[in-house]
Amino acid sequence: MIVAGFGFRAGVTLSALRDALSRAGGPQGVTHLATLADKVAGLEPLALALDLPLVALAPEALRSQLTLTRSDRVVALFGTGSVAEAAALAAAGQGARLRGPRAVSADGTATAAIAEARP
Image 1 (cartoon, one colour):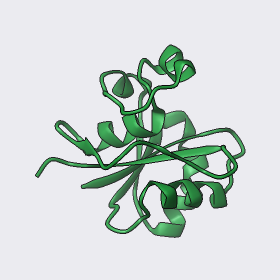
Image 2 (image 1 turned 120 degrees about the horizontal axis):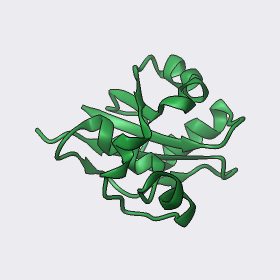
Image 3 (image 1 turned 90 degrees about the vertical axis):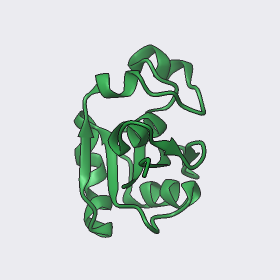
Image 4 (image 1 turned 90 degrees about the horizontal axis):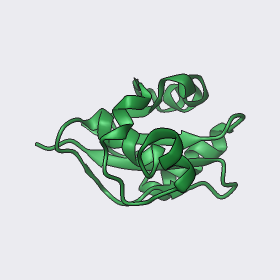
């Protein structure tokens, strides 16, 4: 399983989501998209465009994830450094690893990170 995790602002565009994913390494090989449950509707256009399933995560699922980047605002809200990185790790499962740090869309409204499940 290879999961692209996302964090994004309200009103994010499909273009910004695509851009963040492209900057994180692209959709090749990605099997699932993941984000917080209350943000799933914002990620649905990309899931439909890529024909990939969505994983909706409770905020608690992000708390135990060790991320490569850190936003003080995200730490205060969710107890982890990056929503995108933590979502990718949580959805990919125990022992998953990030391919790299989160990437930010050019307009700054979306972040994406890719994690791989442990074989």
